[in-house]
Image (tube, rainbow, N blue to C red; front, top):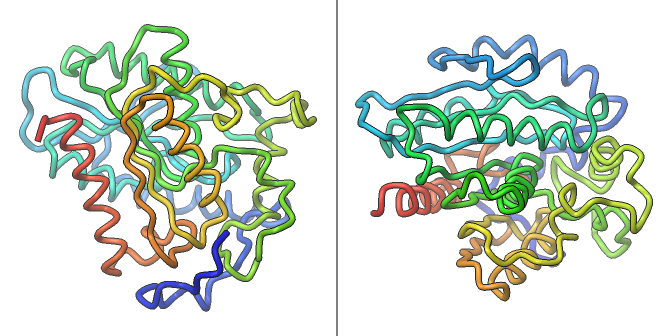
Length: 302
């Protein structure tokens, strides 16, 4: 972690909590998520993929044959959130780029630990690639926070299975490395929203019985995966005051060393989830523009 103060554009930083999701707060946060869910998905088509997995589908106003697509995976520390929470982002990307955006409703830990959330995301990816109006050769996968970590794992799983080849992994401050939970050199004063306490809770719930050091499956924590060659190009964005900064920078460098075209977008003084909480700030708009440009280049050949 750096010793850099918060970016002055992020005025809410001084008021936000360091920790949001814990075992104590999770039940209340889940109730709030359910209560606000319907209001956050006004124009999405909700499709049941199977008995366990559903998706929210955002189609552009103008359809075209064999449309490119983005599979989006929401964040929430593996234990919270739903497919509707990023509806504004999904709709904006669908309309601006003329692509189909699909947000997956995966099952959450700790009730459903690894590999269930990852398997649910792969089920959604296979469904998307099989749709007659989608070009399976132009599918990107992406997400925020825990969702970005799942997207990174999904890229690895897709490589292993060889059925689908995503063209981009779009990773916003991804949750990649359970070993960050054991670090003692992180200054909690530099963190907002997602702290070491939240991180330990999230990883413990997701990994379940595989929490012992040395017993964590690499597909559960992508930073543990040895061979990163052959993966899709990656865009990784993270702030310097994000708990995941160091693990994200390390993963980006490892991807580059493995021959994977990787763009690393570091935002000085930005905290976790800054772009959602302070979307109007100039650095948040620049962050969104960088994501949009990466998607446009990968899916539309801009």
